[in-house]
Each structure stands twice: as C-alpha cells, then as structure tokens.
Length: 444
Image 1 (cartoon, rainbow, N blue to C red):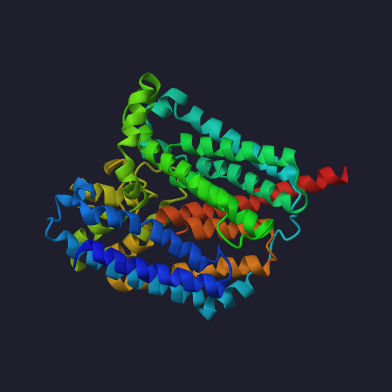
Image 2 (cartoon, rainbow, N blue to C red):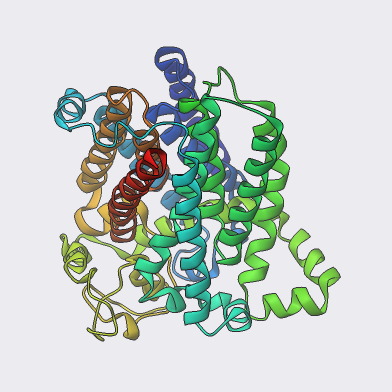
C-alpha cells in the first residue's frame, strides 16, 4: 500500500474525528480539537511530501532504513499513532479526568481582568531575564553566531529561560483586560507587545515557542474576551507569515546563518525560498519516530530508565558536571549519529543537539506499543483535567493560561515535563506576587 494512500486514510481518520468533536464539543479550543489539529498539522503535510519523494527524510534515517522498507515503517508508525490517538481520546473522555479536576482547589480566583500593573511587571521580569541570558552567553554576537549550538548554550540556563516565559504571561494578562474595555490605544499596545515578544522568542532560534505564543494569544482571547465560533480571518491571514517564519528560522540557526543574513541578505533570502518544500519537514517529528521504530527493538527498550534523569533535573550542571540531559531528545540525536546510548549518560558525552521524541516516541522507547497507548491516555487525561479546571474556575486568567500551556506544550518526555512544571510553578509564584503588588497599589 503506497504512502500516499496511507496518508489519505489517516487524513480521513483524524479529520473525521475533528469534525465530529467540533459538532459535539461546540468549542474550537476544546482539548480534543486542539490535540488532533496539532497531530494533523505535524503529520499529514509531511506524509504527503515524502509520499512523492523519500529523499526529504533525513539522511541519518535513510542510511538505516532502505527505500523498500520505508513504506512498511511508515505504515507501522501510522498504526502506532492511531493506537495513541485512541488512547488520547479515551483519556480526554475518561470520568477520571472529571473527578480529578473537581478535587483541585481553585487558586488565584481573585486575579481580575484589569491587572495592567501585573501584566507589565511580568513583562519587565521577562525582559530582564532575556537580557541577562544574552549577557551570560557572551553577548549578542556570540549568541547569534552560534545559534546552531543553542541546545548546549541553553544548558544550565533552564531556570532563566523559564523566567523569560513570564514575558508571554504578561501579554496574556493584558489580552484578558480587553474583556472590560477596548480602545484604539490598547489595540496598538497589544500589537506592539505581540510583535516584540515574537521577535524576542525568534531571536532565541526556535520556531515552536513563537508559534505557540501566537496560538495561545488567540486561545486567551477566545476564553477571556469573546469566543470564536469559527476560525477568525486574522488567523487565516497569519498563515503566510507563519510559513515564511518557518522557512527562514532554520537558515538563521545554521552555522554562519546570522553572518550570512547580515553580509549577504539576498542570498539568505533565496536560500530560505529553497526551503519551501521542507516546510512540512520542519513541522514534523516523523523522522524521529522512524528512527525510534528502527532502533528500539524489544531488547533495547529502556523500561523507564529515561525518567530517572528527572531526579537530576533540578541540579545545575555547574554543580554536577555529570548531569544527564534534561532534554531526552539529546539521546535520540546521539543515536541518529551512530552511537548506542542509554540513560543516564552525562550530557557532555552526548551530541549537543536534540531530536525531541514527545509522548509517542519516548513511551515507545521505554515501553513499546502498550506504552504509547498508556502514555497518550495519560496525556488526554491531563489535557481534560486542565480544561475542566478552567471551566470550574469560571475562566480566570490563571486557569486559561494553565490550560493553554498544558494543551499546547505538555508531553510525557522529560523536557516537556520539566518545562511545563517549571512554567506552572513560576506562573503561580509570580502571578500571585504581581496580584499582591497590584492590590497594594490600588489601596494606595
């Protein structure tokens, strides 16, 4: 069966569930719709591309899997992903998620929708964290000229990067204030904030955080200001900009990418245009999954060993030089490079880059096919707990940010677990602190 036919069948499978969920849930940003749309976007376009030309698959994968065997691996991957989707849906619809969410206490419920002081206080903290991070790596020139090594440069600065995330939170709080009143000056400030934060996130060399930030802005508006009955025209108009963004960021992250942009911008532009056929590849982790399916036989499964690395996550690498990577995708990238590695090896002995495995990948690496089903079930459970908690909290700003952060970013890989937990803890601390400071200002 050809890859293209498999892609069509998978498209009908996922698309049909999305249309049914839209009719039943009556919410464009329900966990079922958001999760499945992300699965669709990160799989179907790339599957279409490789169904016509397998050469788009990374050569580090192609040298392991012959062209004749690739269709079977893709079929196996889609089979496993479909099992995972079933687990995800069962987790979202599980009564357990409703029970757990009903037992979680509502916090920061008094945090209103006109907290301008809080918004700009958090934005200021985020800007300070960003400037200090750039200073700590040696300045702007050092950072931009070494974007291709960003994983190793960020290592040891994870807490600082989490503080930088308060930039986003400040913008979300400002968006929520539009529930109370709207005027031209507020729209101008909001536009300037979104552009500025997007540029800051882009300067860090990643595509996903910026795109997630934009999506979360829409999500916060949807739940705190006015619900969208259909995808707004503004979102459709942003798609071409998002595609251009996806095209040029990989060129900027390559070795000498920043120097090329400054010295020869026209050549940099045309190199970006040549990336058009690679857009789908940049959105997808299918290459990573094919490598996982090839490498991880039953004899090579980790049986949960990768999660032991979480014990070391709070320790700075400056104190514990043999600290294993927080990003478990580093192991996969090292395997792609030809080494046979297992947790908990020191980060300094591994390849200084990452191939994120996300839930499907890391659960297969540890527990094979049953692990994928169980992991996706747990993921669906967590997604719906955060969604029901938001509804229970009557759509407070805090609960909306929590839901958006979890449904767009959380996975059962170590990196996503640490990122999400750190983000939640910091948001609770700093939003609570900002709320307290705001009350003091109002009293005075």
